[in-house]
Length: 241
Image (cartoon, rainbow, N blue to C red):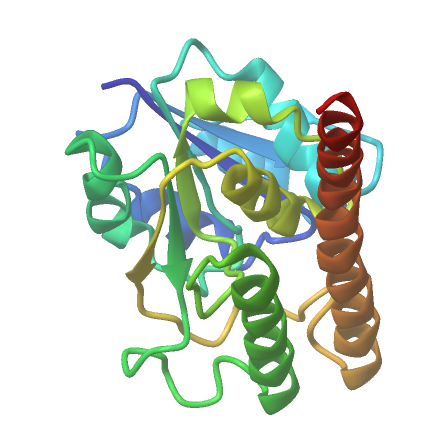
């Protein structure tokens, strides 16, 4: 299988070398670093390590992921990975195994397990992720525990989802649209460590609360957007009968 790894970055010079060095080269066809206006040498380090670097001047986590996806060279499987070395790229084999074995269409690396390093996720991030996962379980009947960034998906599945969120809501959009379309989403426990460098979103309580509110509202909005056409169809069917 052709496996493309996409890594969005912004000022990850302290971590990107560790990330790229840990990616199993025997399993990956290409590594794409999508850099958003770094001024600390991140793109230069990534290029020196052999990654294909794409400059994306427009802001947004989702924008970077979509740019990388559009540039990927005919992959069968696409892996998304942060550039801060909090997830371990060496665990890529266990993340993509269910897809390669035909048991899953999308896999999500869950950080909320015993293998999480102490202090890797602040309590407010743990709470926000569990709250969002609970809401998804109630509304979408999808049993997950986390919305982590380390994930993989079949490329043909991603193309049918028509992903469009350009912010950090992109990560939850993939899950919601995948669940609504009936694709098999499997959660895989992964280890998690304190990131190298400061978080752009989750490093502060204010940032986490803002992200949590956006994600929770997105979960509810997608649910009712899906339900409305369904109800209209049911009413039309009842009128005809």
